[in-house]
Image (cartoon, rainbow, N blue to C red):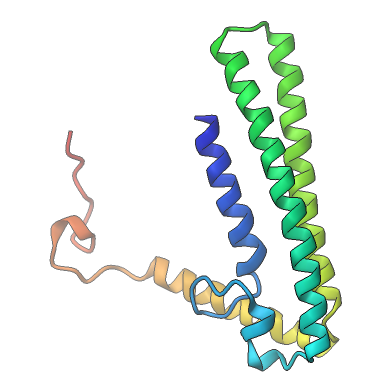
Length: 159
């Protein structure tokens, strides 16, 4: 179960790191290279790319450490270790997870600091439009006639 959570965490970290600034196009990872409405200078784009490259390298290293510590935690739990050992390992895992989140947040801050105030406003507007589009797609009822695809009331679970 822990490795599954690690994969989910990594996916969430990467999606959050880059989706906040992406346009409505899915998986547009390098928004600073492909969003013309921000009117980034080549120097700004290069600075943001450098922040990203440094940040992603740190994130990958921290993610590897998190995976290693979570693996050890899983083994401790599976071996029915005493509560004190498990608690210590949980503390180590959560400390690394916290560092990972801090690194991601600081990377986003440093990317944002490269932008001029008017570019930040445009970036926020892009993010808001993307969030609204995602929310609209999520809230939009399905019009499918296939009973298993939604739109026809609650689905029945098959056992």
